[in-house]
Image (tube, rainbow, N blue to C red; front, side):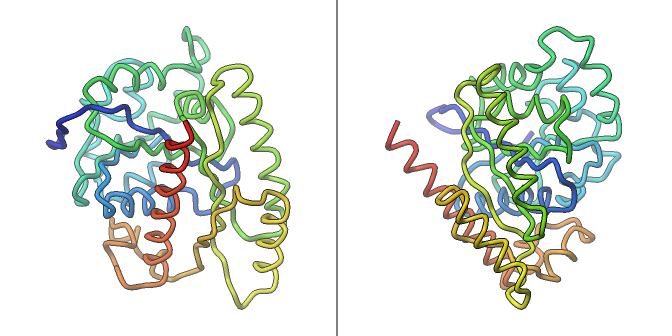
Length: 272
């Protein structure tokens, strides 16, 4: 693990990047938001909790380098400190995922405190944590892996594709967050909803954005993430888009989103 030491240890804020639907830009958002936050001089850890391991691939972490991973962390075979790998982005590390994680849903069922496995690992790590933020990239489902992320998190960030069924899926997710808050994690809140794959040439994108903002108001970030070919190309090079092409519209959007997220975090801290 790289040396990201700090003179004063403060518990990191933990944000779960969640959407039970696939193909909404969830992993893309986790990777590029984390990179943009690091560009804003924040020390960031990404925990890849998706068995597909796309966030790990998006940072260029080869599978042979994923000896200790999020699966090992969940079942107690490795600590977060042991599993974290430095990325090419200064100030940003990742706990990678491997296909072994696909079996964790079954193994966790028989374990004590199965919903708290990730939270307990994070709590053990916090005393020596060098991070300002931990972002958890969740799988596209509401199973035990995502439940572990919701129990461990301080807040939820929801990427939402600008498509017809967006509101229906978001309503289901918010109901799940409410149930987790009542039963397992009373401090859990929704940090925000980010509209992804936004196409200004498409009337549907404009209509979905208006509907989501009308229904959820200020919970929705002002920043929208556009459809952008450079965002799609970057993972094949093992790079976040902000590293792959700093000047493209996708990079600028994720930098704007990071500033908005951090400003919202400052407002929440001031109100606490």
